[in-house]
Image 1 (cartoon, helix red, strand yellow):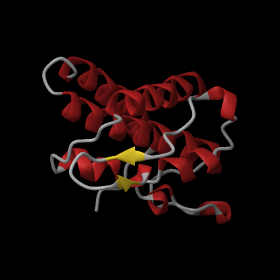
Image 2 (cartoon, rainbow, N blue to C red):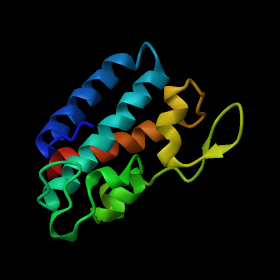
Image 3 (tube, rainbow, N blue to C red):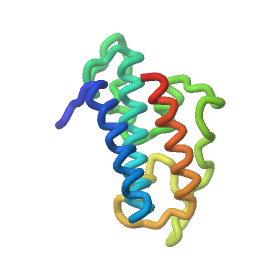
Image 4 (tube, one colour):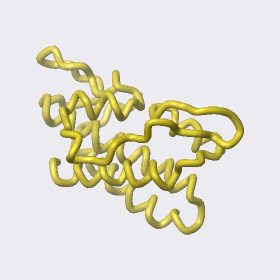
Length: 138
């Protein structure tokens, strides 16, 4: 299992964000997926740095490992105590075109498997606001 450092996650967050920007004109869903993973990397790097963790499996000082958050961006935001005014509000309801609503932590699956998400533009704005916060706090 890969166990990256906060520095590696920070670097990857902004590489993925740049890739998402390049992909946006070709495939909006692929771009959104890259943006989701970029935000996840940025939040995990921020969390690890705030808790002085050296890898995603590290639990020193009684802190949860970054890996334990899986893909739950909202839990990471809460764990980091990011003020509501610092980032856009998360989408309250995410609708897939073929079925019903899903939670934020399942977005990566919807985009990864080609499920069309109706709210992609609004979600990308939220993810971008997370990355903006990460950039100013890393």
